[in-house]
Length: 392
Ligand SMILES: Nc1nc2c(ncn2[C@@H]2O[C@H](COP(=O)(O)OP(=O)(O)OP(=O)(O)O)[C@@H](O)[C@H]2O)c(=O)[nH]1
Image 1 (cartoon, rainbow, N blue to C red):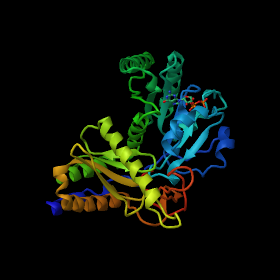
Image 2: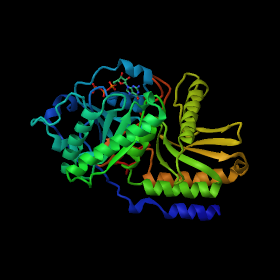
Image 3: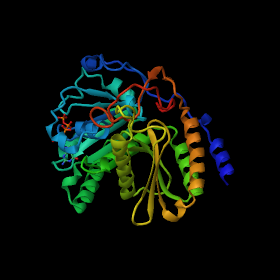
Image 4: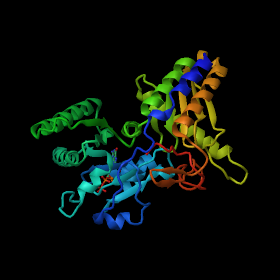
């Protein structure tokens, strides 16, 4: 069975997937000040964070990609210029996030929005659900309709944010209402083809990571292959659920095709935190050198309800985290062998090598999570790669 499995995995390798998937190179006069000093133009997909002032855009970006604790966001100052964040240096996920200041007059004639939208993979519009959202809906409509006319390929994502302050019933009602009104506005403008996806989010729980995972997954051209590999892996190993995690951001870049329940996702996120924390405390060399997450990273946690959590390194940035029953874990040898095949296939999918890789003209260097500095996402030493060549 295992050999068959290996063949199945090997058979589905990447040739059929675009290697140079990416978005355009831009240079905008309007944003000289912000962009000139940033890592140069390249073909990385761009995710825009837009919305009214104080809707929570910067908080989302800081919490998901910079390990800021949600309480610290209370002290974030208002963004007054476009903040361009290239997160490819510390994460598997290889794109730029542009945080727009709420007060920018986006449709100022001197503002080259066509350039911006042309190079955009996803536009996240953040709506503060604790506030009156009528103005936000007007702004949403204006933004997405302009963007759609420039680039119909953009994924339009609406985060109904700060839902931690709402009761469960109120959450559902707010989502229904926003969904209805936003789509009515689009229908009135004959923009039925413009598809909006809605997510209920909060930085105070895992919902923001889940939503971001889904946004990012849509930008990964290899997603069907990854899902396929995960399906084959779990069905041959007696595993109930498996996630392929970006360890730094805790975004899952793929999972098998069984439905995701929030509790399983949270459990797996917590496991990553535990593993990295324990590794930071007990796993480093005497001088405190090294990375908290490396080739040797492996953890098994048995819960008191006969569930086993299993985490193993896949690449410098990716970990496989699985949930399974204790009985299935008795066949650990089989799981390990299948994992070995799975890992090999993932490496082949992304052609991960230990050297600098060229991605649509951009050279990317990156390092795995380390314990030094401000949280585990801080880069310590610049190690070469682990970033997928084709994930651009
Ligand atoms: N309750 C709650 N508050 C949040 C959440 N996300 C952000 N906030 C708070 O919302 C306030 C505004 O957050 P920012 O991230 O600065 O908002 P912004 O959209 O970047 O604002 P501008 O830079 O002015 O455009 C801060 O006090 C955050 O702590 C959330 O999920 N729940």
